[in-house]
Image 1 (tube, chains in turn purple, blue, cyan, brown):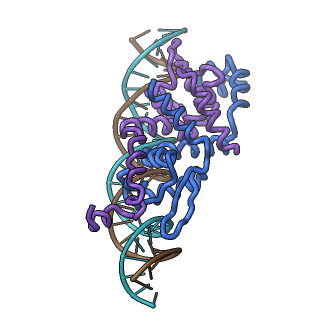
Image 2 (image 1 turned 90 degrees about the vertical axis):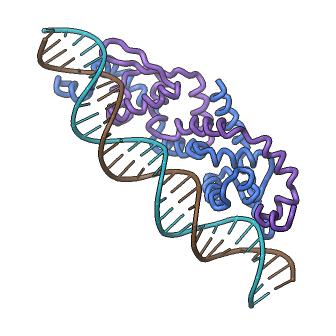
Image 3 (image 1 turned 180 degrees about the vertical axis):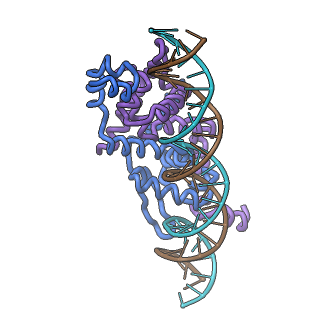
Length: 121
Length: 121
DNA sequence: TTTACATATGATCATTTGTTCATATGTTCA
DNA sequence: TGAACATATGAACAAATGATCATATGTAAA
């Protein structure tokens, strides 16, 4: 590797431990997986959605119940439920005029709990 | 409760199960906690940051190494490391000109793993 | 103390995201 | 069928976010 190349590459550490860097490179997940992972965490990255999930943890519920419990507009909740449904964290069941939403994934409680443990430290 | 009130409140379910709704209300975490929780998940809601964390999972590393491993600008990485440091997920150690970053929290691996399990289903 | 390098940071810009408003769809009951 | 209600949705807007660029800070060696 010429001296010009090494300048372009950046700090000296790269050259000293180039082999280590190469090994680490292999351990990084594919870009597709990383995007999916980020998208997954994005779902929990909004307090309204977290509230909805907490509410549904207790019992299935209709849209306007959730809206009331969370002090949010029916529209806002409906939009977020759509997001949650697309992410398959939530499922819907129609009963006459009302639509009941419930969790469609048993791990949600664990994920929220683990997050909670973290911020409580 | 008058008929006018009930109309304002929304769907009929509210009235039928008002007691249940009240109980659920008690189980929702405080708003402060919800915001903190959302902020916590926000950290993992970006693929660049996840990449950085994966890299640091293997070994401590300097900024430009991370930049090279992630195919990102030194500046972009530095900005994100700042975020991660403020969230106390990462700590820095200076050695001469270079600054070595490393994970400051042992749970990060678990959190990423749990997320990964999820998207692999 | 000047030079070179590693990192940090402020400003800017484009993109994404969440809410609101108005309105559409779907369902029940008179 | 039409009125009333529950939910869904598209458009618009404001706020948040992440990358880039230029430049500043900090450190070591000549």
